[in-house]
Structures are given as C-alpha cells and as structure tokens.
Image (cartoon, rainbow, N blue to C red; front, side, top):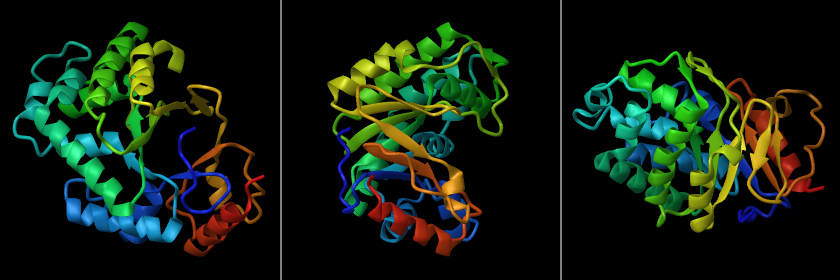
Length: 267
C-alpha cells in the first residue's frame, strides 16, 4: 500500500468517522457536505482528535448532497428509467465534478493528509442513484454493474490531480438498499476501475460485508466495530494497513483509549 504512517504509529490507520463524528463532534447534526468551511472545520476536529493517517471522505454522501444543489440535475437523472441512466447522468455532471474536486482538494490540504475516497461499489452506486432520482430498480444484474463500473472509472479518471491515495469501493449493504444484486461484487469483475487506479498509481480495495479485498499483494485488515465498544477488545490483526469504522454509540473516553492502543501496537 502507498499509504504511509504520518502519525508515528507502526501501521497506518484509515478511519471512517462519519457516524461517530456526527453523534459526538457535531452533536447529532449531519456532516455539512455542501458547506465547505464548516466541513473543513469538522474534518480538522477529526484529525486533531483521532489522528488518522489518511482523510476518509465518503464520495457517495458528498455527491448525493452536491447533486441536490445542482439546478435540474435530479430531474435529469430521472428523465429516463433505463437502468444505469441515473448514475451515468450524475457522474457526467461537470458542475458536480467541480464541486467534488474543490471539496476533495480543499479538505486534503486543510488536514495535510492524502485522501481515501470511499465510493459506493458500482452495483450499490447504481441502485442508490436511481433511488435519489425516484426511479428505483428492483435488481442489478452483473452486466448492469459492469456498465456502472465503466461510468465510475471514467469519473475517477477525471480526479487524476487530486491528493488521493486509496479508492475504497464499498459494497456493503446499508439501510435503504432495496434492490437485489444478481451476484456478489469482486474486484476482478471491474477491470475498468482497476486499470484507472493503476494508471493513476492509486491503491484500490473493495469492502464487503465479509471483509476487504485489496488489489495487489498488500495486506489490509478491518478492525471491527466491537473494538470501539468492548471492554477488552484485544489487539487488531497484523496488517500493513488498518481500516475501521467508529460507531456512533462509542464512548469518547473509550475511543481515545483505543487510539492510544493502536498507536502503540503494530504487531
């Protein structure tokens, strides 16, 4: 992996802060994706408190929030019900690309970290784009997911100048996902995305409900939510990179204790 430890810990840490940050740092308010000064202030709080080695940004949340601010875009996404049209239209929007690019660069510069861009996997992105447009789909076939991967690969290719280190495709089921997937998603099925990531010298991984698949030989481990909640969670699995999500219900004192443990445990 190209992500290095800028915090001094032996194993670089990528931390999905959204649920915990919203509950604790923002006192229940949502992350202000469309208010750049407020977003930067929030991300600086995350960095100061938790000191991750890369800035985790949820591209799905960012783009869907931004789409609501682009005049007419949601209507354009809904103009045709053909499967994939909503996502293709979303990712083709120049205004939305500009919004995302400015946000990614400004956020990365503000916290002085490269960005881990968490993007919904092609099948998940496709179904959620249709849901936003109001043209829900009942299922997503492997061919439709493959087409979605091409739209996503083209969009990622336009971010070549951004301070990115890792693209994390998130294939996990979330509340609100109603479409059925014809097949489980694998990196091997998404050569268009893999080729773009390699061309841009970006690490690439796919997160599923079962674990983490990394493109290449590097080892990466998911630290489970229980690490932040249990009284005695034990040490995380040895790896070259740790990825974790801090749940909203985690106690602040416990979170700081676990951060200290991660800082001292690289075995």
